[in-house]
Length: 491
Image (cartoon, rainbow, N blue to C red; front, side, top):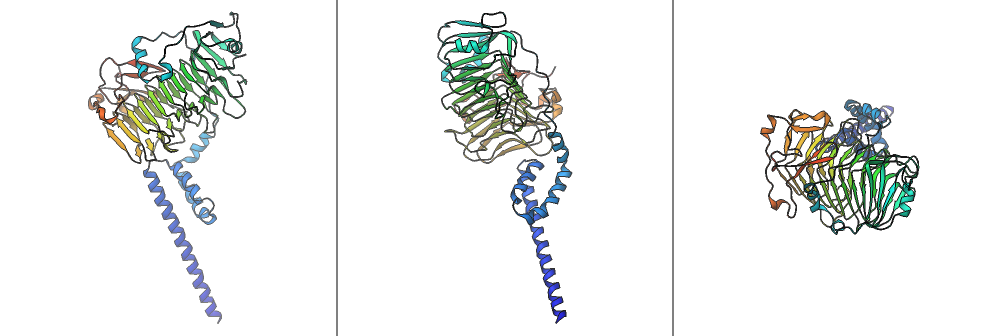
């Protein structure tokens, strides 16, 4: 009798062991299959493992079996070294020198942005009522005092220099111009804020801000911005947003528009992934021309939920020691023209995607992405996605783009691609310094192809200019010859 029980016990033990081993094998096969499938979608190893962690979370037995496997993969991939690096404080260097007086734009440069301006800027401005002068030797020495004195139609001129006191202000006027004179006026928050939100809060009619630097905004909710734009039509030109928790942050006011020109956004972000160099809400329209976005702290270089986006001849480059997530994020789709930009993902990014479109769902009335004559660079090793469109419901047209590094397009549906070419780093003059001018004889192997007007009715996909470091633009003297953002060859 004892022998029967012993044999029965051994049988049950072996059966149980077999079932457990079989179950573990099936789990590992499932994990392996998911790993392979997810890897094919262009995600990094770290992103795949984070996804699998979430899938097995709450299942103790699965967690017990998969934990050592995942740990081994992470060690093999070097993620621990990456995590150790990411845990280091985000280093913010001294700010760049203030810009001197800016040369006025010529008629051709003004004509470059004119077709993209929203209706709010097409009507001519009214006559200037008064000019208020602000500066150490002026009658008005405080910016906050000038803000309380300004009326509709006024111009506020701020002498170039560094300002540490009474710099925060709220502006609610119409047809107001605020400009640094003799160079840029640099405003340091130094712990103060307007309405607990930003250095400046803007909620007027048409307001133009020129030649102003916004530095070091911090507030209690870690959302302090250089400018908090809440309502109206705002045009920002030749401004610097540096080391704020958000560079420029807007509301979701659907009748408002924002224009950004020749400006720089650098080292902004609270490090929480929810604050960015530029974060635009559900505005009616956004136009960004000849600007420079770099070195965001964990957040995105450029994020916009606007219904219409025109992103023209900019440099979005995270460079060495940058920690940006996406370089360009359009999470709600909408209509977007991305033309003539240099967009580069650095080696220290936490994300494998360079451009993301519609990740949170297509909420615009029209959803179309036109990607033309851009130089897209992925310096992160391993898998990557130059473009990720994970949801259906949008038209995606990609023409004459130059793709550099590992990665490909991951578009669920609706992609039309024409003359998108790949190039190695050896094709460029100084790629480690983000100088992506083509060198001979490589440029002879790359040729521009004129896009059919039928690809994008109502949109011009032919570049008329090219970005110039740090935040300028050069008009093209001849039709484009090469794919990518730059037509000027290396010397």
